[in-house]
Image 1 (cartoon, rainbow, N blue to C red):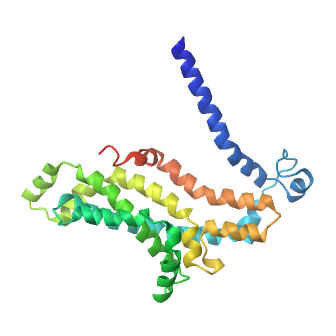
Image 2 (spheres, rainbow, N blue to C red; image 1 turned 180 degrees about the vertical axis):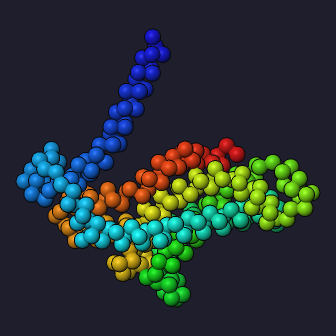
Image 3 (tube, one colour; image 1 turned 30 degrees about the vertical axis):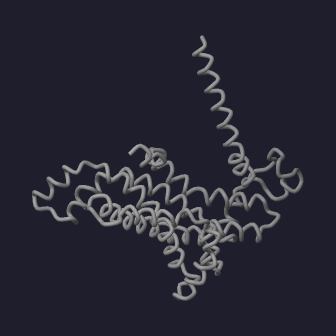
Length: 274
């Protein structure tokens, strides 16, 4: 009886927490389908008295959400691919070969992620100006790759380090070189970790705001998160249009999470028990 009560209390608490978490999301979705007159007459927090999808059209075309989503994908996809590719190569070298000072190298790479990003805003902006990359998507890609590389390498290092060395030694006996060992043996075994990091990094980079407004200036080049700020300024009193833009911006990350949900959750513990 006591166990049943505990189970019931646990499930009840989880349901309440789920409702508490989903309530703001549902509120934004419902508000995105209300007309401006409805919100103006009854208030933002009232029950809906209208239904329209024209707010999504306004956010998509008039608010520039289409171009912002394209910009976000043009930044996010190359950043994720380059970051994981470079991190995998670095982790392979550091974990499978005796490199002098490899612990120091790992600590230095990880130390960059421990710095508050606010103190690096001016140096990063100035450096992008000196290199001629300021106000280009290439600058944002370089920043995302540079600041994520240390963390991704550290995580993949912990995963690759515990792979059986006998597999690598057997491949070397068969005449396989470092490139073949990496591409045909280590990389396939690291696929779960790469999938988890890919989902996590896609979410982080796609939702980034700070670095985008640091190295970009032109509105047409802004990713989706900074574009939402511009949408708020353009439709300052049209809360339904702003809510519609928020829903549109959330679709890609939700799709990636649903696709890689299992790897996404397991990725939170990668390296923790290695």
